[in-house]
Image (cartoon, rainbow, N blue to C red):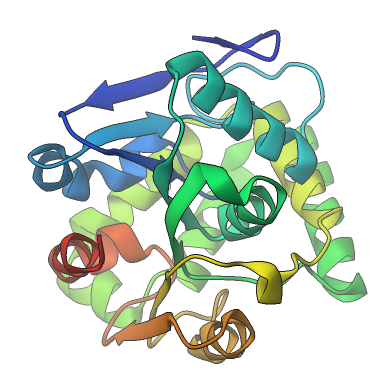
Length: 254
């Protein structure tokens, strides 16, 4: 699908009000495969691969602002006036910026493994990771990401989930993943307090990337309509590690 002059891979299924699902750094729309069928029974489910991720080629500006522009552009192409929006990890920043920028386009917001814009040490680490991937490919970082971002219980009891996370990472073009790292390194903090729609923040108890404390901080900023949920034995890849629980919570929230 042509959006803002670039080709984006977009999967659309189901009927009803629209739900847009944005994956995080190193993911694709397939991150939400466990939720897609259940949501598709009640909603039109839209799952793009972000620019430079998965099946969407590296092209043009790749930044958080660029991801926001692509999200708004995708809504325009599809003729969607108002949607429910879900973002994971890096895309929790994109999603918040989009809701603040065009509040009339969004009726509800879900943030999975929510993160703050990185401070300087985090920015440096992301730029170093980008350089490593450009020089050595995805094999240089994939195993470390799986080990650091999935829970011990997932790796022990659900090795197929951990293997799928690794597969998502290994399917990335190194140049696209590196550009995503640099986009996250350049991110600015959203104005969470300006979000005027109901918000659900969901994360894993063992999430070391988007810790439950971050979700609590953002919920306090978002105000009285914000809800939080923390899944036991779950790390950062929420839609995969707590698949059934998240599906139920999304259906209830929407």
